[in-house]
Image 1: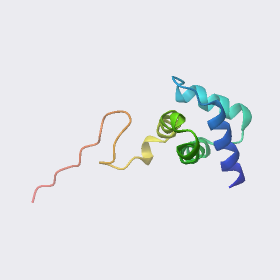
Image 2: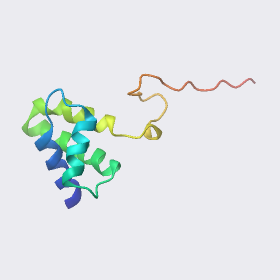
Image 3: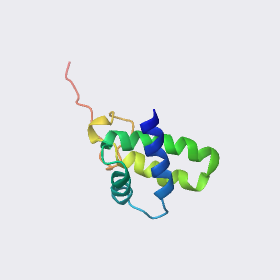
Image 4: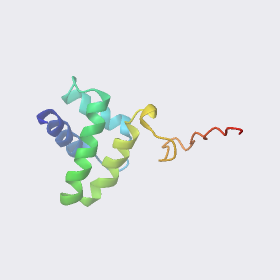
Length: 94
């Protein structure tokens, strides 16, 4: 949990309006080279929760990073696709 808190604090510190998720991820990796993409994504969601209480203006920036850093494989059909292309369910004939 300490690693998650440290990554979340770094994300919250460097997140700026208009910043692309890749830029922020690069900054986080400079400070936490051992952090995986999954660690950074979890840290971003944790930072969103913390920012919602303390700094509502940063919530959308952090949320964009959190969503942008997820793997496409993590998406569940019907929950939304940041790429804008949902997979269609296959129809079966009876």
